[in-house]
Length: 88
Image 1 (cartoon, rainbow, N blue to C red):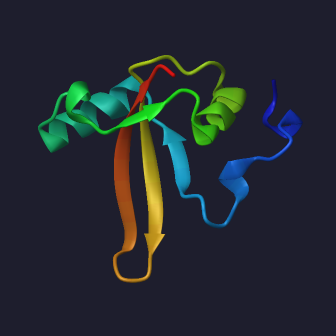
Image 2 (cartoon, rainbow, N blue to C red; image 1 turned 120 degrees about the vertical axis):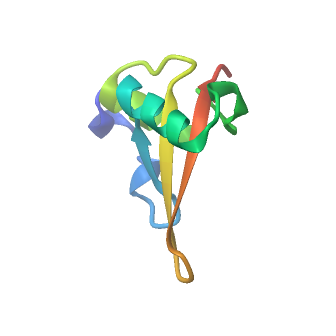
Image 3 (cartoon, rainbow, N blue to C red; image 1 turned 90 degrees about the vertical axis):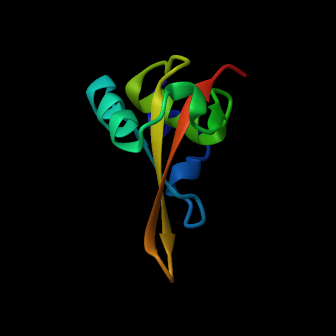
């Protein structure tokens, strides 16, 4: 399914932060930099609307992948968070 076929792309909404699917190399570098393991990251379900839209763009997103979420902030300019994709 292409992203254009989704009735409402939540990632284009002003209040939804940017979502980026990391490659395995990027994910490993992030985990090493943070000194964390995948299991220590906050979780996001495969059924989350943002993950479903990413899946329509990149193909099915497997459990264990890491998503970078970038929130715009008036005080911090930008806040970056990482989430581990889990089932559900």
